[in-house]
Length: 389
Image (cartoon, rainbow, N blue to C red):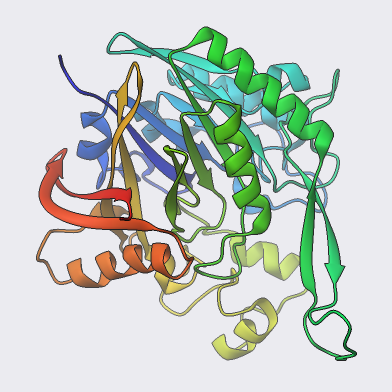
């Protein structure tokens, strides 16, 4: 019996003069898979401007959808899907569908936003459900209101050392899951399970300001999703590759980083906020936004992320009608042209990239092993991801 595979990447935003080139580096890997997933984090429209206060650089012309036909399913449940309002969302959904991509995670109502995309691959029915924990206020879908499918939490702040007075110490963040949101997502997973052999859940979540860190909220939600019947959980948002683990056998990729994220107009967003990006020194911008914050960096005008965000990966998961089989990662590096390319085994960056991916597991305290058995996928080096023993 032929092996059926899913390839998954994190955040995707294309905004360049030659959009058809955006995914050329990883195209052989994605094309080798039977099912390809990603998170489109932006708006595709030629008609609707960004809403006041929203990010303008994530609202891109529909011509930038040119390379997206390689995807079968894309989540649009994220914090930028509503940057151009209802009209921008409608255009994004229509543009993706015109490219043969099934969008999930947003729609004209909450029921529509949580409706699964059901795809048949290799005789296996796979249902994909998408939701987001990171979103602007009032962009969530409602019973009759358009928006994204939410999985929110409310943060409270506790003393770092209970019983002690310690002025100035950072508070401990306690995230309390929104039970109403969870009830809707849990029902969506159950409905997807009734229609498919395998259920994949995509969640936009996590901490984009620090490497290695997995929030209590995403850890809890991963465990709840596994318990509700998800066979695979795919996380994104952080723009930094984060760890992977197994929850009672369910693979959870906490952060898939990004595979292409063009932001040539991002400096204009900052200027509109009064940030003097033209005269500020890099260390001054780092003081304002944090070391891992988003701001223009020397030699990287279209890619305003920490240099470590250039290290990313494509997750490869073997699908089986009875569950999920083997998992792996194709290590990639995003070059100065903004194009991610697989890292060659034994090449100049191989040890650096593998060490970074491995550290994502160990420094987050995850019992997950990243092993090099000399395997390949789509002509690229493939690392195995397994439960640690």
